[in-house]
Length: 190
Ligand code: AMP
Image 1 (cartoon, rainbow, N blue to C red):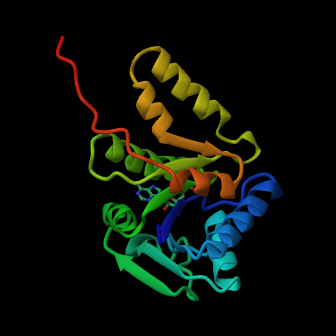
Image 2 (image 1 turned 90 degrees about the horizontal axis):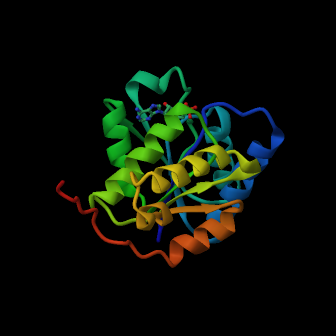
């Protein structure tokens, strides 16, 4: 693994713990010599992860759609800022560039990006690890819903396990290193 995509909030969240987790993740990426790919903004938790990686001497690639360049205030100090035409291109570019995908706490935008990369793995469009950094129990409700999906047989156990989860950046990245893809989703005819 050389490059990790981080999806996260364009807000700071209600507690300092989210900011602290973003800093910890940024430092861990640099410690492992991993390049950060992210949405290219300077706002919220997104800006904190990018600033931390840069301050620690690491490399950051931002991918920002022209539509959001002003609103999310694109980060001007990145190693590389890739401007794309729309949201779809942003996600595709990030998926193409990264060897693994982490969702820090974030809002609907973060979830949308995370679920796309997770479901693309299920159908075999890539075989890279993806996981949730469950800071402060932020994703506990979502993890309960994953259990519910499995229990009600809308999610196979092997794909629930494909969603890697940790409270700590180092733990999650260790899981990424030993990840093997469970194989393609198959469908049963009724
Ligand atoms: P949020 O988690 O809602 O704060 O959003 C985090 C990031 O996700 C922001 O940079 C949003 O621009 C981005 N985002 C929201 N929706 C999409 C989408 N459909 N495709 C790509 N990025 C998105």
